[in-house]
Amino acid sequence: QVQLVESGGGLVQPGGSLTLSCAASVSIFSFDTMGWYRQGSGKQRDLVATLTSTGSTNYADSVKGRFTISRDNANTVYLQMNSLKPEDTAVYYCHGRIEQGIAALPLAYWGQGTQVTVSS
Image 1 (cartoon, rainbow, N blue to C red):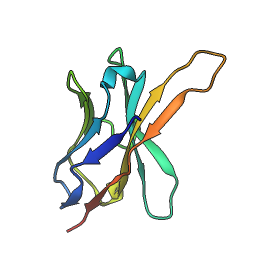
Image 2: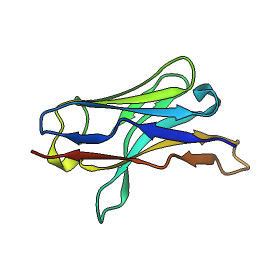
Image 3: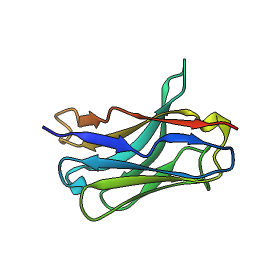
């Protein structure tokens, strides 16, 4: 059973930094894409950043230049968040995707989420 477990959330002041971690129960290279999503109160879940198995990254416009997604060589993906703003407040979710070719839907896995609150 594949599991993703986030950690590192908390309360931080505007302008501060925080690093989120996502530990997978399998090698992160088992996934074609890993990423971070966030969901603010009363809002939909939105993409924050993705990282493919080949090392390509993609970021939401709202976090470009402030957030960085990275990984180790084992089972952890990180999200370094700098210059945090109150609008970054949300539950952050780790996501892993495994492609199964054109004849099948991809497998998708989600963590339980970690709360990030940016407030003075």
